[in-house]
Amino acid sequence: MNTSHPHDAIFKQFMSDPATARDFLDIHLPPGLRGLCDLSSLRLEPGCFIEPDLRAFYSDILYALRADGRPGYISCVVEHQSRPEKLMAFRLIRYCLAAMQQHLRQGHDRLPLVIPLLFYHGTASPYPYSTHWLDLFEQPEVAALLYSQPFPLVDVTVLSGDDIMKHRRIALLELVRKHIRQRDMLELAEPIGFLLSLGLCSTEARASGRHPSSRTATSCQGRGSQNHSGNHGPDRTGIAAVAPLSADSRFPKPYPEKQMKKRRARIEPSPAVLFIPRLTAG
Image (cartoon, rainbow, N blue to C red):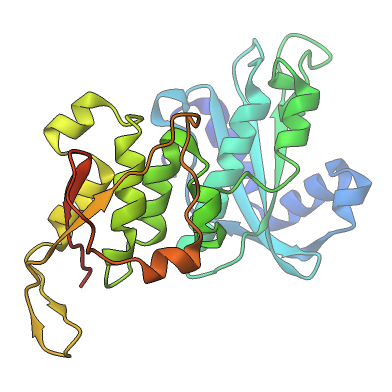
């Protein structure tokens, strides 16, 4: 057994014995967690999640067991240094996440319960810091709200075109990404031209061709498409989109989606015309 510290060898010698580990966990796990754990299924797992530069100060050992009837783990960490680590609760969370990642790499598709447990024998008594990781935030109440609910999601697949057209500077990106897999991008020419004409995109993006719509055009050119007659081949058709700005509106007037599908490329040229290549996706 390779260890980086004499204390590490002693700790792992004791805790690697299943009977000793079961006694330790049976005595020290909080009753609510102890009730979840089937200690008869306890077995030692390989691996170390402590960073190499910290192994002189910490040791860890990972047990697998049945927790509430499902695969679970107990991550036990011992702190060798005399002065406790203020951010230790966050470190324990990181080791739990590492154990979850290892579980997923083994072919599982659901996260397991991982119970963190800190073994402390420092000079300060009692242990001076909170073991609740949310207490490490400047605003624990806000952190508790954030990390106890689903994360915010921006799902453009469920946004209507009319809603996207109201989204100011981000509208163009959302519109292009929503329809990125659409085979014929002709229907988007008018709203894209409209959004570009508002001047909400950066000058640099326009000049360098790094605009999302330009990248889409570049990625789709040369692939070929199926035209309306059913033949396959490159489509060199260009379309003209006019941006009908109104003097009393700072933002786009939404195009009804049904109207967008009916409007095509035959638009009278004018100084306001913006030519956009017909975009197709392979």
